[in-house]
Amino acid sequence: MMMVADLRSIELGKSRPIIYDRDIGLRLLMRDDETGAEHFLAEYPPGLEAKAHRHTVAHTIVVLDGRMLVNQEEIGPGSYCHFPAGEVMRHAPVGEHACLFVVMFHGPFDVEPIES
Image 1 (cartoon, rainbow, N blue to C red):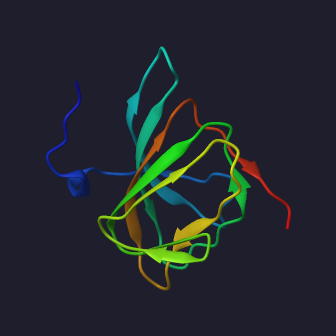
Image 2 (cartoon, rainbow, N blue to C red):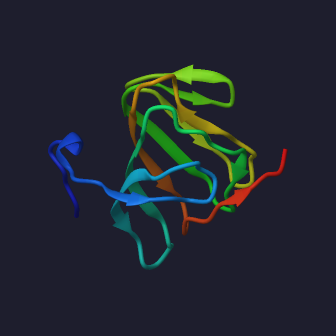
C-alpha cells in the first residue's frame, strides 16, 4: 500500500519527455511490476508547449492545482479525464500558470509524438 496525505508536499524531480519544449516536474508514485502500470505526480511549468501525441496504453489525469488545456477544452482543479489507448491528444497548462496533476498509466509509460 502507498498513501500520501498531501500530494502538494512531494518534491518533484525534473524530466523532459520528447513532446515538451522544456522540463516538467515529475515523481513516480507507484509502479506495478505485474502489469507495468505507473502513477506519477506531475507539474507543468507556466507557458509549457506540448506536441500532439499518443500512448499505447490508456491513461487517466486528475488535476490538483491550476488549469490544463486538453484537446482544446480547459479543465481545472478536481477535473478528471481518461484517454483510451492510442488516442491522439495534446495537454498543456493554461496561460502563465503551473498545473499540478496525477497521471495514471494503465501499463508502462511510452509516448509517440504525432507530426502535425
